Image (cartoon, rainbow, N blue to C red; front, side, top):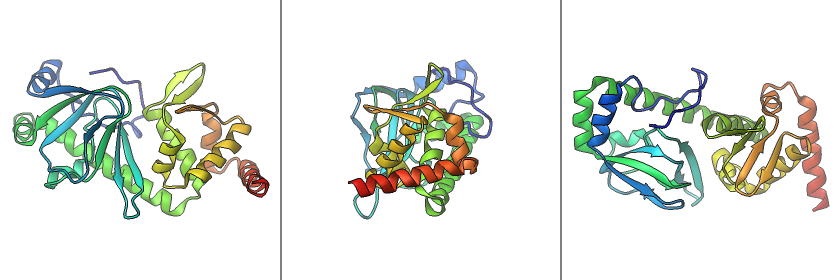
Amino acid sequence: MPERREESPTTRTPELFDGLSDSVRQSILSASVQRVFSSGEKIFLEGEPKQKLFLLVQGLVKVSQVNSKGDEVILCLNVPGQVIGSLSDMVGSTLTSSALALQSSKVAMWSWPSFQAIMERFPLLLRNVQEMMVHQITELSSRICEISTAPVEICLARALIRLTDQIGRRVDGHFEVSLTQQGLSQIVGAGAFHVNHLLSAWERQGLVTRRRCLIVVRDLAGLKGLCEGTRRGAYKKVESALVSSHLAG
């Protein structure tokens, strides 16, 4: 499995093979079927029968649902070492989410009966799955509360902070996040127009830079300051910029 960069214990996402020896990992992987999905290729679709467990070995995968209005909502971005999709599917007969490869991605797959037998053989693997479920439920609950109660600018700032930790690539002291503005909108549950205007205002302040299919976080401390309420003046600047832009348009 690819080596992950260090993360704080409070934000780190549990992985399926945590604590297992290399020999046990290889034994479990040898029981899987592995396939490479091209960028933009669907791995599975919401509503399909639950037949397999999917583990991301290499690449990046978007997991999403379609709401009652027909809008796509991104639940999470899976990185290597994580089970793809919602772990709540373990207790259901159909898949509750869809998964799409955002880049060329290698995926290991087990049939559910064979994976259940593997968990019985290796109790630590079962414990890891349980910890991943708790982490996933906690993160989704936090995001729902955040989206329901916090201003869009706070939701967007927190989303970017999480993304720098999850998929950010450090380049020249900044963090490059490979995600489109539309993807950000789907994560925070806000309109693309609003997200675009917030990013425009933050770009003028030097917090971020926008590129094609890429957001560069130039001032991570500044984004954290927004969330902590230590840059109240920045809120006013953002609001003023949004109002001015709206009036000009």
